Length: 241
Image (cartoon, rainbow, N blue to C red; front, side, top):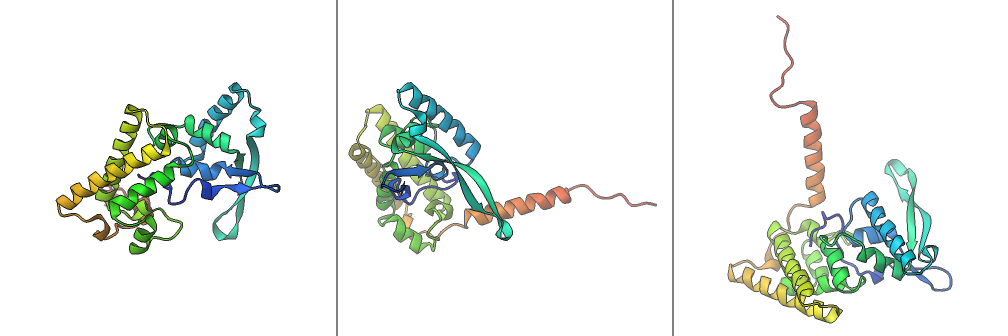
């Protein structure tokens, strides 16, 4: 599954739960944004708006499930910035997943199963594809703890993971799979088939070297683009005779 796909999940939905005094659990929208595969806050806010409408239509009080809050983030040179965020109940998270873009694999898993289990399902798929856990592969490739494995995965691995995931999504919808167990078993089976295909062609997923850090690539491309704008190819400053 891609992270471009801004931050793909290596931790579960439950790991992002927080608690207020009294033990009531909640999630922050900016955390859920990345868990569900949205890189832009503005796009995610649109999904939240639809979820609020669904909440109201279902007879629930929106303010009981969606609470606007502020969040302070670190900026360059030690500066800070206050950004809007939303405290969400479990039900709110469910409604957001149900109103998200089903073309996103994270959303598709959440819609065919339950919102909190898609990361667990994906992790089980990785275990089969690599023959070892996601954490073990992160250690193998020296991936920082807070970075997704996909940011360092070779293209062929990204394509393999996507292929297995798309088969799972297709079959889950085609056969009306609803339980985590059914979808999880399907995903395991598909990753096993993809792994066998790779091994049959002499490719051992866990033995491949990591690709260049995708964020380094993005920074380099951005720098090169900036330089090209300053000095466009084929253009020269005319000299005076």
